[in-house]
Image (cartoon, rainbow over all chains, first blue to last red; front, side):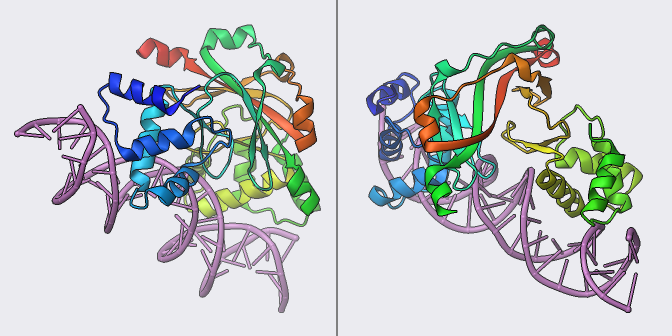
Length: 140
Length: 140
DNA sequence: CTGTGTGCAAAACGTTTGCATGCCT
DNA sequence: AGGCATGCAAACGTTTTGCACACAG
């Protein structure tokens, strides 16, 4: 569930320092279902911590991703998004406004063909649905 | 199947001009299963047409994408790839070398939950498998 | 006190754009 | 001949990096 407390624990156990900047990012991610971009996170934290830099945001997200505490989502042509929900699930993105919503993992159960299994050792999969969201449909 | 001849036909029918650069790109794409990036295509065509520019490659790919003759694949963090196979199918990418292979469309049949269908009008989906390819595994 | 983390500025990266010239039709 | 296509160079948006200073441990 990635509470900011659990992230603090994990950082401590790896001897990564707990800074107010990092803590602020943890709190933004906690239970976040919005799939924020680095820019989103930066803008949000800047409200309470105006001196923070993009560098810090990116570096913290990098660490979190490498620890497996956050998924980097490659579904939007324009930028990467981050998801603190690391359990298997999928996404649908609006082709107009790039809003991303969650899609339950259970509705999908892909099987890799034999041939591919000889060529690759798969680790995970992700389904990207593309479409138009209600807001954008009504604006058209 | 996107022979270069069929692309020439389609370009003519839309009154797009047939230039040697465009023809070269068509030929590179014809039957191409490698999921080339713009850079790959540029490097390949540069061998036979050394004065070609990135601009021309990108603009031609843009037209092809908008005509639906090529898919822009968003699976690799680092760059976009282009796929002349526009029928429903999926991909597996090596996390080490970013090589992409095809995965048959039939092996996957995702269903969107009710809730999502109220929020989105879906148009298509794509499954991204992640893993490590044989070459990279043996190098480790 | 030590070394990791921060933030600035600049670079890097893939991609896009403005514009003058070239060439397909 | 006309106008779309090309290619250069410059701009773009996102992400990364080098470096001096700051601060968590």
